Length: 99
Image (cartoon, rainbow, N blue to C red; front, side):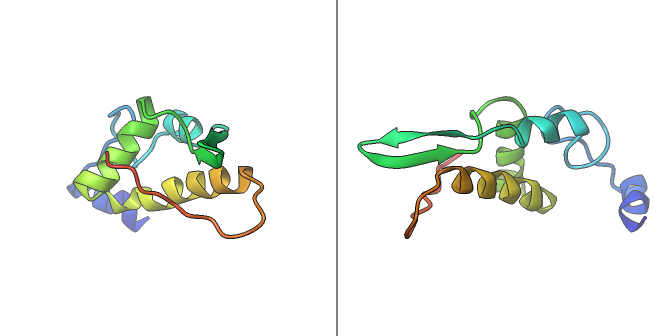
């Protein structure tokens, strides 16, 4: 409820498509939570939460460059799904990618 009241004073828009409302609209949240891509790079397992376009790109840029901290939870959830999809037993290295 507090979030809704704050939105009256400081309205926000979806980071993915720009429609007025929450940090991510339902459609963009679904795009962000789509199946991750898994493969290899130089023999090392590789996963990404999604293609760097559309709602995914919008959410990453809004979080990393515009300080939209409310996107940390959905982005973290997408990252967790991607890491889990690797099915690797042992240590993992997460490599940040510049936006």
